[in-house]
Length: 204
Image (cartoon, one colour):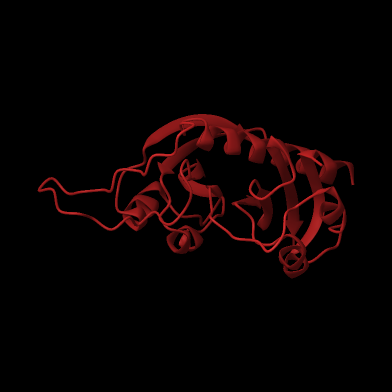
């Protein structure tokens, strides 16, 4: 139980940092990202999509390679850095501007020993029939299924998949249509399609 709590804390902190990292470069006045063009000026289709993101395999032994992801997205990463994930140093590659998503959206893939072990997509655009407030947030409890989470709060704006000891956990982040301050957000960790931990900030 203690190990699970530490893992939950680490993943929630990691998710929060990724939210900040991907949105920090977005200006206060939204500007439509420049559409990719070839050297000849021909308009290219943006292949940094949710559909392609889902194709990326994460596993310390069989996860997608950097080359695989570059081929999938059709371009080099916008930038690369090193950071710690679950106390291990990984190479993090970031692709900006997810097709059909909000300004400041991005995909971050963490590679360990050449294999993708964690992947995050941010800025997903979603419309909900309601605002998420503390009362609605409280309806999601430990054991709530992923379907129940979507039914209660709607689809998330950010999703992180992390491979740990051969098992994959998910972190769902909600950053839009929230009742609270401009920095309001809530995060949920799921294992085996069930909520095992949650956190919120500035919800009213």
